Image (cartoon, rainbow, N blue to C red; front, side, top):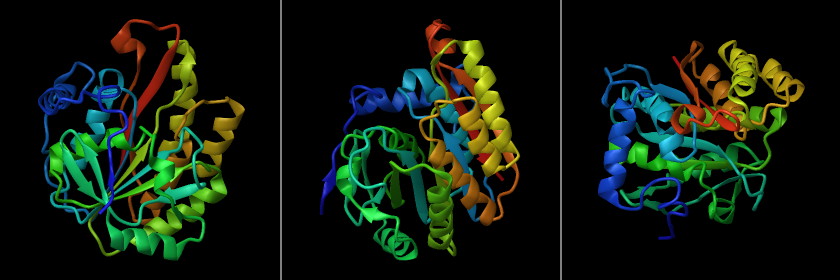
Amino acid sequence: MSVRKAAVAGQFYPSDPEELSELIDGCYLHPLGPGAEPPAKETSADYVAVVCPHAGYIYSGPVAAHSYLHVSSMRNPDLIVVVAPNHYGIGSGVSTFSEGEWETPLGRMRVDQRASRMLTELSDIVSIDPGAHRLEHSLEVQLPFLQKIYGSKVPFLPVSLAFQDEETTSALARALTGTVKGRRAVLIASSDLTHYETASAAKEKDTALLQQVLKMDVKGFYSTLERLEVTACGYGAISTVLQAARALGLEKPELLRYATSGETTGDNLQVVGYSALRFV
């Protein structure tokens, strides 16, 4: 069985398992975090869907913790789907794994072969291309948070997007909806927002973009993205999960937390924006 080794352990998050575990715990109780640790009150819903940032944990971890506290409201899911951008442009436009495991300092997570097979059968835009994931951090950084909640017992489906246009994300959302139907599933969109602008400019742009997400307006989302030149790196992941969530009956988006890197570094001249959202 193939193993995808951690590419950014020691960079985006600690490579030492104990240090990593303690840092994740601290994210929940950080001043920018939700102020409580998992598990959250159990949900009876069959699906949980969130948007989550993917920067270094010291910058975006507390915001991510808001999303993961909500994720923890689902006990014993059958499947976890993580949709993330392909920053390097390596490999196919939309890619997944057929089998194998992903390794982090906290252990390994198994790729769900059934879900991978179904996704590729339901959409001809999805390719089996492990190489597209080899260097990518945006999906990998979500796994230790998931492992702290579920251990390594829940299989997952990794999806990497080099193509993030509206047509692609709509087709992918339809295929993902069919893939998770009949299973208890967690869906995660991995994305940061505005990059390397002042905190005030980032907040203004990000607020406008998030308003479209909160309205579940995909066309308005893409229009705002283009009009304001919002440099959200995983906009296609957000669009995909938004559309899949709506198709699965999760029609009430809620912004859990917005912050910028300036709130942890003190540098407000060049920040990155981070958001945690859920669909219920």
